[in-house]
Length: 320
Image (tube, rainbow, N blue to C red; front, side, top):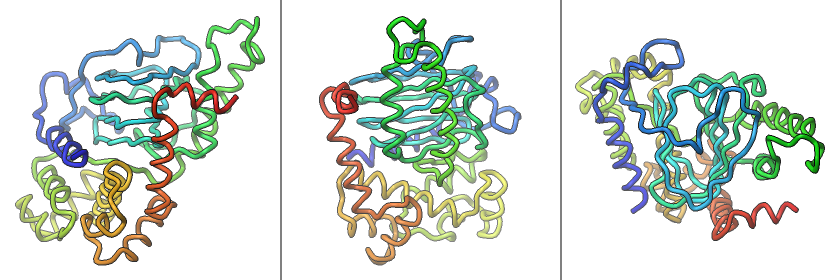
């Protein structure tokens, strides 16, 4: 049920025609956006005022649809419970509990949660993170990352040194350290990204791929796109910056994470649905991609979801 909802959302984003708002969106290479990304309304909970100090906001049991054309600083989004969708100029992410994404400065984005979700937003200044990725990047939270992100919600950005832990210098030092560690935390393979494609042909191939992971071939995708197999491979590399093979692997692993983490499917069922002939071959591929075996991934997602059930303040108390 949840998987089909994600598929419908992504298909809508890929099909959604460009409108006048699109002209103001700028892609990572500095050129005007030509992908189906449309900004919605702003949400004051997600805004970073110019000159504001670094701080963290805990949103509990929240539903939202928040957009930003370009924040002066970066935003670290950590999902504690639920499913959060992130849309950017080049693609979209479906973020599960226990995953985090960094949105760099001056990057347009749209964050959505249709069901109650718990997340932490860490606002960082542009000079606190040495960001070397092209655009947003999502990974699984490490134990250290989760604890530091939760600890960040304890600091008062307006602390003048009277009663704060270390005063304003301690606050600044903490967020500088957190920003520095982002370089290490995100120096891993990204997860949960689905590209849009800049043309109708590549968009059609992406839709076909997502709907046919159980029995996917380059020939079928090429036919759906109306291209030869050779042309499809070349266009994937040119438009998305990744090979067809790498794209296919990402789509399979992302879908596997949805099945294991959201739908609680077995390893065998998941392997078959994403196109592997055996659970053993799937386990090798999944472990190489995520750093965890499928069963360990499912166990960790269940633990993260369980810890965040009810009041996320309980997570903060656990750190005391």
